Length: 345
Ligand code: ATP
Image 1: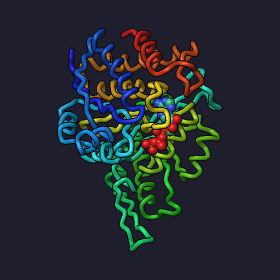
Image 2 (image 1 turned 180 degrees about the vertical axis):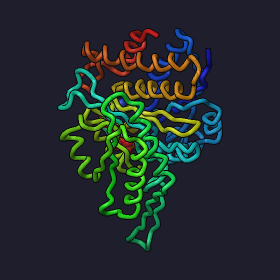
Image 3 (image 1 turned 180 degrees about the horizontal axis):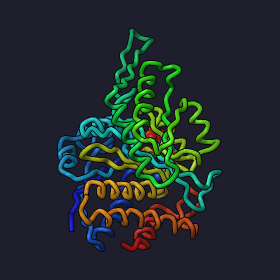
């Protein structure tokens, strides 16, 4: 029996609601299975700024550093002061964002199963913007060979781990950003030679955005740069039914942070209508990552638990038990209660 320390960032907007749903699920697992969790609540984001004068206070940072893994609900206006700092500190170079069709969700495409592998440390996210006088700004976009190689390798390894189509498409805009994206493209092509079993192709980001709507079933693994990955993953989430079902993982060598793809959604905050499924599926990804770190016999238990979380969601959706955002009538708390009681571990 292993105990895992999980730092839980409660966040802003709908963050606290879905963080609480996630906590209920983790407590159920901890109470009824051999996998045990110690959950540490962590203050970070707009609320933390008001309370402690810092979006990511030192003691919150310390709690996260002491944990085995972090689960994060969305943070509001000060997201950049939290997640970008954490991604950089823990060198979380891969942002993994699956988009998958589930039953009874209104969508034109019922059999999508793809994952976006987004480079997570470079590109315009470094915030290198320099005003030139009053009415111009120069922005710098960083691309390095080292980060491009690491994310390309992650994407091909991910394609091997997945049991379906086995193809990787590298998405960029090398016809405009000839040097930076030219290098990203060349490195992905070079990496593909080490993986002869995986079909490799390339696409400009505009064509990819169109094909994600026209023919999303064709995609398996999308390998791309930071900003393009951010945009394409919201699009992919909507193609399969909306952000309420979209999980993500920020993965590094020794640490990872799992979080919904969506933001704090202030328009629906404090209404008890947020869909906590994005959090439940983020927990599934977290368990799979813990399994990867854990090569002993608990590995299978963790993978099994992750599958049970997804199966619980599928069985509820098949019975049309769902939240308002995806055409149901359940509120956050009620759906969470039903979900947690239906999960048999
Ligand atoms: P950010 O830029 O921080 O990612 P955003 O402006 O893209 O945020 P989100 O907060 O991601 O906006 O959400 C976009 C919309 O999707 C929200 O306004 C909300 O209506 C819907 N939405 C997002 N997450 C959920 C959820 N868990 N349940 C229900 N609806 C959601």
